Length: 280
Image (tube, rainbow, N blue to C red; front, side, top):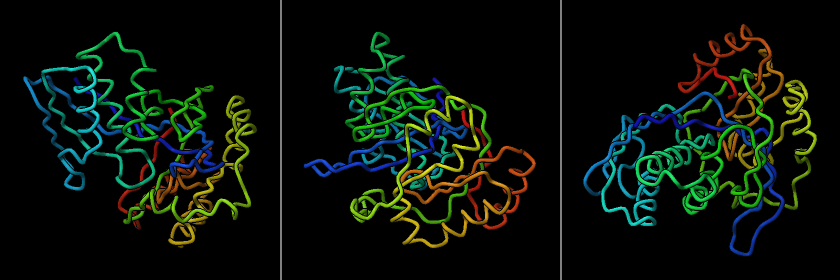
């Protein structure tokens, strides 16, 4: 089976508290974009074989896609196995859910192969054991995600909006970003309810100007180049820019493809991983 595993951006990311077990409580708007990894998944007699065109990801039990296959085989007592080949297009350690979306794709493919009667809710229960973004990646589209990210409520699709994505040469540790976030010093938070209303009206201008991610408080302070990237994208006609996830990827929404193309061409001279794409 061939499966496309789509990346995501955060239109809003707020941290509203912290649980006793250390997990942060979130209120987010997540959005699928037309940037994806490709997974070829084949039935084999037993075991898990993982291959990739990327030398930057582990190809053993440390890989979240491998973990997804194992948790599925173990949970449903499947005696046969699976061979997975991941063609990586989504940057790693980028805040784009590249690993989580691969894991979600593996779970969906294995459901189709072995247990077609399993619904999305049951698959999402498996997914949250792998990572907080995996349940959303199983569903995709436009959604408000709460809890630690695992409670997914779909809203009207915010489709076909143009964006330019810039991923600088370094990665960011999500764990370290949350560790350094002080909830007492968050002054500006996203108004998720108003952003949802704007999304339902397809009001790209309002969404772009009011997007917020409280994790910028940590990551932008540590990596000042991200503020420079935001300023440059804005100067080339973006309606607004935001860091996705814990970073370091920055995206900007554009209402005009010519402006987006000009921005893409300019940023491509400076950064290796630059993409022009759309919400889906």
